[in-house]
Image (cartoon, rainbow over all chains, first blue to last red; front, side, top):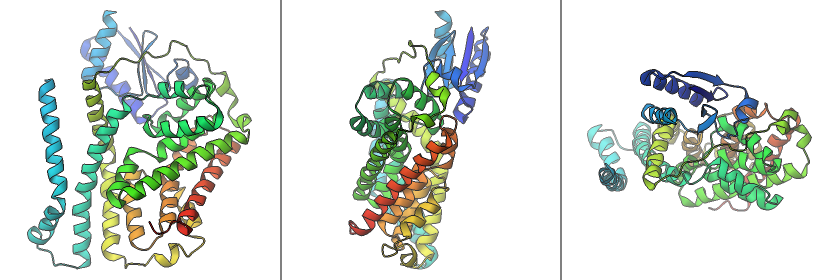
Amino acid sequence: MEIKVLGTGCKKCKTLEAVTKQAVEELQLDAVVEKVEDIQQIMSYGIMQTPGLVVDGKVVLSGQLPDITLMKGILTQQQSK
Amino acid sequence: MKTKRIITLILSLISWVIIYHYLKPISDFIVDDVFKMKAETHLTESVRFFIFEVPKVLLLLVLIIFLVGIVRSYFSAEKTRKALEGKPLFVGNIMASLLGIVTPFCSCSAIPLFLGFVEAGIPVGVTFSFLIAAPMINEVALVMLVGLFGWKVALIYVATGLIVAISAGYILEKLKLQKYVADWVFTVKSQQNGLELPQLTFNDRIIAGLTSVKEIVGKIWIYVLAGIAIGAGAHGYVPDDFLARVLGADNWYSVLLAIVVGVPLYSNAAGIIPIVSVLIEKGVSLGTALAFMMSVIGLSLPEIIILKKVLKWQLIAVFVGVVATGIIIVGYVFNYWVFAV
């Protein structure tokens, strides 16, 4: 699994990165979490609100900060696909 | 689970109404009978103001942010962009300003939003209308204004904020300033598949409302407390009409002074409005106070610094100039023609 956290460095983006990493760890997923801070790269995913979350090239969240339970749900759902 | 949530919501709403209704007697009881403070002293009046206003404003904030959170779940930056695509200039400015009020927006997303709009072919001026209205007219500002001044002033604020956003965006477009947008902006290409938004049930929307209460109130309660504390101090100690001489309507430069002080100041609505309410109580005229409030909330250095990434300095200067001029006009109009609100 390839997970990207899109964000220019605001507080929400950092929190999202932390929540993502926590979820990956707790679910013991085989995943790489990468932070994308370059605005042009962020825009290439077609989102208009940061932070964004991209799983295997697909945008699953934009402008939203999920709690750990919801994040685990999202990742589990993406994994089973 | 679902029924339990509905029952909890209804019970909370009932207790909200009861507490709000009895706030005055409760706060008087605390000040006069629990603290046993001497009536009519400066300190007593300051404490009374604080103990009454803090729960009042917090109660209003929780309810309105909850409702706005539900309303906002029907909007998104993506839908707003779609609505604005291909709209002619003036109509586009009006729609962008109105959508700016209800679309969820955080100033940290100003850049991706700007890029997303421009990429969709929405005129830069229309995009500016959105970016001016979104931070300036928001639910927190509205709640604080209703709570401390009443409906009339709140509506005036919304109306004048809209006028500033619409006309500033329109003028910026007419000035043909596209060449001052950073060049790389126009080369950004995004995948067209983008984001598929999930269908929300009403239950999801209620959760969205609760989440926004937790998020926003959790972030601003400290500003509310600080703002009301400063307001309470001034309420008790600053003599009435003390500020009338400097910042009253008779002084022609009061509006200009308010903006010069207001633009570099950065606070959110929650912190600045209790202070503004006391300024008015002490004799500052409504136009001057409105101008001050708009320049603090609407024009902020942090947002300008964020926008510096996509705009050249010439455009930023014109942007600040046009918005500030709009605010100045609003200030004078209120000082001279509609003073008796």
